[in-house]
Length: 245
Image (cartoon, rainbow, N blue to C red; front, side):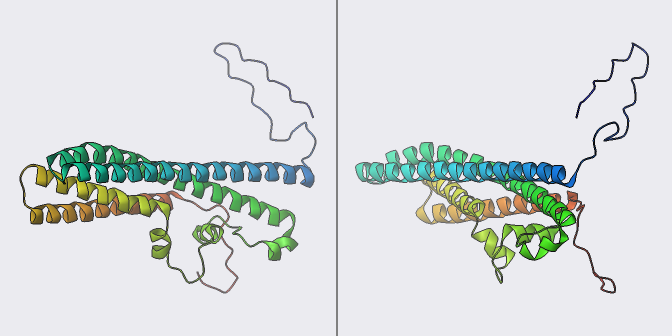
């Protein structure tokens, strides 16, 4: 198979119009289609693995930084008897850890979107596999449609587990809770540093924790709705005749 480059158009003249796809070339055989689809399938799988590896790496970096900060705070607390030095040290190191946590959260959100795109792509390729070999359908356990149900099937959420439980068990939610706890701890230390009482510090810390949870949950809900609203399935599940959706 040879590919000819079209000659460049002269200035002011319209360029040559290419012919239809496949014109003048050999017909694409089922074996060639299968090879192209398999290559794309493995490319999406490798891209998804890279996204997952980066997710675990970023979460590990955040947890390591948080653990180190807690150990450092414990040592300073022993040396200063939880005095002003402890509070000042906490107000310096905890915002740095919170910054790492916020960056991790944003990266996890991007990785989650990337993961969904890869799942949609692989489901479409499975749909193409079934077009080439419909008799293989009983052997597929993952989704072969690119609608919401097909994506959820490929994500392999255990039967009987609600979506809320899946969200709580996810790594992004863990980072969300830890970031909220950091925000509450920073607020409580700030109140103590300016001369506030212990009760005021606890109330401010709880309020900031709840506000941070609510804010991050609202942003995540908005992103999910935006993704679902912009998704247009090209290979949805076929509804049997006589059955209403």
